[in-house]
Image (cartoon, rainbow, N blue to C red; front, side, top):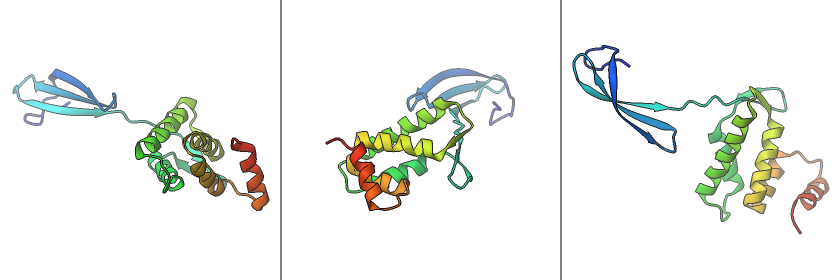
Length: 150
């Protein structure tokens, strides 16, 4: 790390603090030459895999995009933003835990449906109706009857 005053790249760390559940590390440093002090912030950079779409396109997994889809499914439902963000975090961690460079969109969609089913049945139905392509209404009804509790 270069000193912002004299550009020397030798310093010592005076203090380290971890913030945001271990995602951000804040360090207070002192230059060994000019003794000026400065603060650096380190963040964890996660490398998400590519999602392979039905048509073969590849897109980087974006938790923000997933959150928007879940918000749309949960619109006007008694589901808090915190619950939705937790769901996105669970799915994101699951995706990272797979350790793959590419993941089929269908696998991710099924995981989202599973998590939404545990969160809110109406949100699950909304997401499933958009995510899955049904031939007709009867196929949609049959799928719902199979998956929803009585």
